[in-house]
Length: 382
Image (cartoon, rainbow, N blue to C red):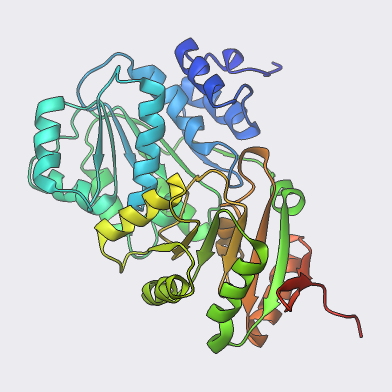
């Protein structure tokens, strides 16, 4: 069957109209693969490059199946507060208040969440494992009506830090359910851990080879800097590029606050998100960045997992990860929905060698650059 529109995928007409308002008129490759399988009732494990529409790939069929049910029927588990908020926002956009949804995350008042569950009886619940599990153990969140389950960013949900809570939460769902899990990458270890949580041995695995986004839509640049000069280099880069919206990554969550403070000292409108920062400040920074009140957001890798923020033109990493998957997730925050973007790595000597290995492994071209009198130029060839 030749699939060209969402109508070809039996997506509800009201959802198709909503997508048209976002100028989304044709399904992506991963959506063409996943939606028919979920419509057919299959359990699906799927992965695709960042920015290829994985959230709508499960929201469109599952939300279509619960219309117009009441009571908890659809549970979405995601690893971070920001990603949970983003998923709920997209679900609310599609549902247009026809069905109640609830956001169950650790940064919000637990008493208000309990009151909302009791009063609104939400049919869609989005949350992170720790707070969801807390409410289940308190007897305030009943999972006996869950018919559809999604583990978004599934590889992170079964990481060493979150696996036990995720597994315990899944085991609390005693009813028969249809499950989906997605991510941009799945390691062999994460696949092995995920399979028992999906609720059936009959799992359909779907994937797309869409790394052309990484290779053709993202420009990859590298700047050398010793550790003590990295933040100064970052400030100079931001001034030279006159960036409207940039996401800055640091693998050290404990340094996020320090980096933000130094950027602000130099007159740069910046905020930060990481698990070590105050949750209210974290939410405030994220909202400010999304709305354009600040143009630089400094983040740990975990905090920014799966985020879809429009108009991020530049990703700047203050280190080079050892794992290619981390580089993929970082770079994937730009060049969303067909746009183009730039991925910049600021690294010391050992990290530049590591970047060269990543370049070969990922099949990308990384161009070295230097800053000279406020301008970004290519270094002279020897």
